[in-house]
Length: 216
Image (cartoon, rainbow, N blue to C red; front, side, top):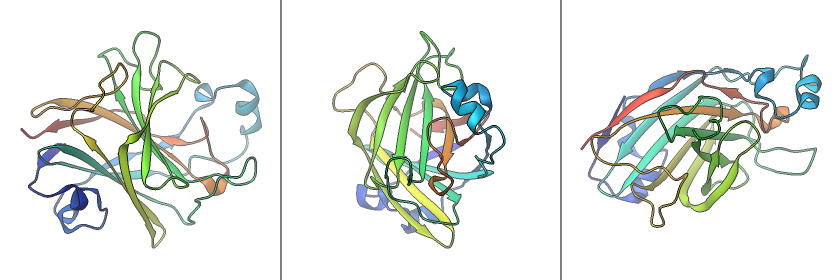
């Protein structure tokens, strides 16, 4: 998938309904239910063993860049809009992107010495996404909760979310991915249905990397 360079400002790049996204080619990413091995505890795995979850089957991914920023537009079916967080009763819809930080980074939340960088958006915080880092299941830590901007809308049973960030972070640190023209990169994805009480390892995820290249 080619991430094209376009001459537009950040406001248009971040708007999921901007005309520029209509001309961007989408990659259809298949999603599957996260297996029991991805659950952080045996209790959670046992509790959800016979309950349906991770029912989102596909995610439409588009990506563009301008001279300073990169943006990813993610769209998936969601019959209801869930944007509240009340402990144990209400959970927000969410989506995440995972970028490997080494050639050896495992697809499933990274591993020791081979972490992944995560952009994690939740519907109860619609204007931003967290940047986390993980080195295995249950190890996710927040590195930056401000620099990834987001804009979202729910319409006709679908979420469309754009997450965008400067190509190079203002405060580089381990666990923060950087982007340069001509770069080849990979990403995987996850979706949570808050209406089904999904959170943590209870989700749908992509079982393979999406290969991308940034236009110079």
